[in-house]
Image 1: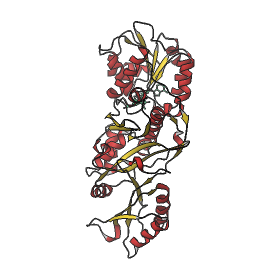
Image 2: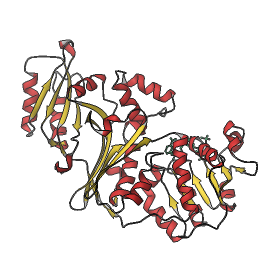
Image 3: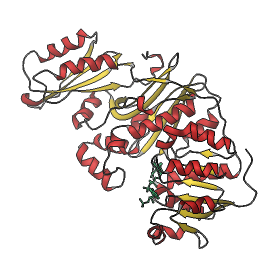
Image 4: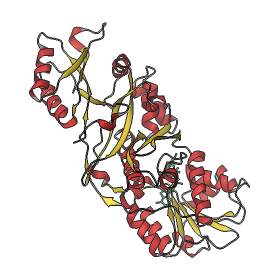
Length: 431
Ligand SMILES: NC(=O)c1ccc[n+]([C@@H]2O[C@H](COP(=O)([O-])OP(=O)(O)OC[C@H]3O[C@@H](n4cnc5c(N)ncnc54)[C@H](OP(=O)(O)O)[C@@H]3O)[C@@H](O)[C@H]2O)c1
């Protein structure tokens, strides 16, 4: 891949929203040699042109709401910041076929269609970079592609969704899920429909991109199991603390022998002294574990216009200078979400004699051993929360036991089962 023609690289921004307008701001700040904003495309573009952020675009910028203008323009690089599968996917295809390089922050599109679009870019002699698609402003993707390409990465784990981290790190300080979610929506951290974030689907797309970049494994995002954080309650943080832990939405992918990989996104108990417990608010964190160099930690602001725009503009500079990322062959892999780990099980019961022995009977029936039983004082017997932790057991076995326990008359709410992350679980078996 050669650098674009010497001199000025002309940039077209598709989508003048949070990140698009921040990219325009950086391009107009005067510290980036050779990049020039030439065109802004957005639906109903007059509205955008009248916005306060329009001041970041120079007087010569073409504002349009016709995509054909983008293809016809002399822009060398298209920055796709519209988001979502379509029409962004078709627009990227058309731009690549038209010989324009593309920079995008679109995790869903790259998770589902990344390899196909990369092949199209290669066939047309242009570049497709997506450094902002995971962890926003934290350079995880370029760091892995370049700085860790010589490593045999065996596992990536981390906190990939800033909204969930904001919610859980606030709940850790005693706020309720409903109250914090409302604040997150008011502050613009969470969508009015928060399902993609709290349900783990946003993090799942990012985890699949990381599995591809770090471990050269192509996973189908639909096969990666997810667990929502919505069932977590303030009481779980109190019990987690007694166990020396807190709760985070953890995304984890790990190499297994054969053509299958472990991958899962779920709220988990993480030890208070682990890097994941330290990340607060909308911070993201990724830990890469390698066979030779051990752990490498990336952390910082995973979202926000400016932070994400830095990653986008870094990709723009790379394209402009013909910087070529290392590429290694990628293998399709099946997915299992099953792994052996200790589990935290929280029950809310109408207390009656024999409940604990019924629960321990259901667990021992599937071969799961209880490690500890915790019961905080001060709760009424007719609505009593208590916790059982298990010795390392397969998730699927715990799920089967929890299903049978959930059917007991005394259960006032579905039991909550969370994996307890072991800090250095290199040696934990995975199914
Ligand atoms: N925000 C972050 O912190 C962050 C971090 C990492 C990655 N990303 C990724 O960056 C991308 C952009 O995110 P964002 O937060 O900037 O989103 P955003 O604020 O919603 O901006 C999207 C822009 O695209 C426009 N748009 C949407 N659909 C369109 C269509 N069909 N035709 C024409 N214009 C359309 C929107 O116009 P309207 O105003 O008319 O809706 C809006 O101006 C997404 O892929 C996102 O996942 C964002």
